[in-house]
Length: 180
Image: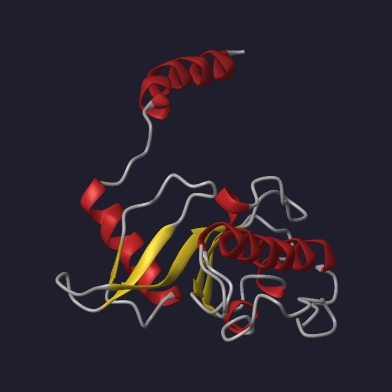
C-alpha cells in the first residue's frame, strides 16, 4: 500500500512536465523540411512555402530568384491521401513529381508499422519509385516490389504515392499539347 502512495505522489509531481508539448525550434524544423524537400527533388534550387491546395503541396523551382521556373511539386502523402492507412496507421511520405509526371523521389518520414525494417523502412522501398511515371500501373508484385508479410503496408504506401501524385498532376499540371 505504501508503494502505491509513492507512485501517486511521483505521478502528481511529474504530470505537469509530461503535459508540456514537445517542440523543436522552428528554425530546426524549417532546415529539416528544406533538407527533406531537396532529397525528394534534388534538381530544384528552391521551394515555396507549403501551398494550401487542395491538395497541399510545395512548388519546386529551378534557377535563381530573378529567373526561376517551376520544376515540379512535392507533397506529403498524409495531406494528399489522408484516408490511406498502412497496417498500423498513416505512413507519412514526402513525394516529388516533375512537370512531366515523373517521380523525382520518395522519402518515408514516419510510420508505425509492426514489420519495421521489413516493409517501408528500407531505403530500397522508396528508391524504387524514383523515375516512375505517374501513368505506370504501380502494381505491387508487378512494377513495385512486394515484401512478404507486409502486404497491407506496401499496398497502402504504393496507393498513397500513386494517387497523391496523380491528384497533384490533375490539379496543378497541364497535359502536353493543351493549355490550362
